[in-house]
Image (cartoon, rainbow, N blue to C red; front, side, top):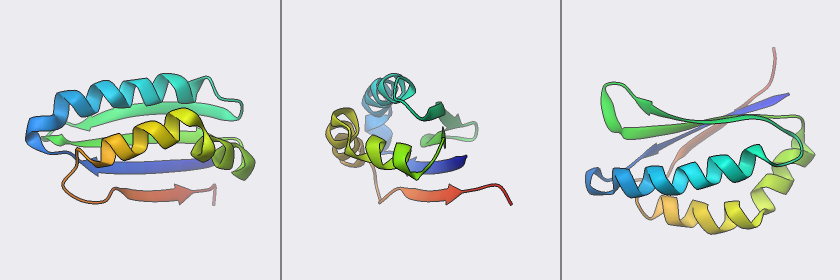
Length: 94
């Protein structure tokens, strides 16, 4: 299993729009083959910090996700609502 943590710093005026689009991404991603889990979390101390916690079966599932229509459509829209590039780290069991 591969886990991904993707953290976005969202413009204060765009948090609601980001969250609405992000929920679309979560719903579509959860339906993908190879997806184990996909969550959107907001930092308790900073409403502009939103993080996706993802778990995927393998690299093939991640590659399919990254090529999916919902990912290629929504991620550029989400990035446009941020103040910087997202921090994305992939993890595997140690």
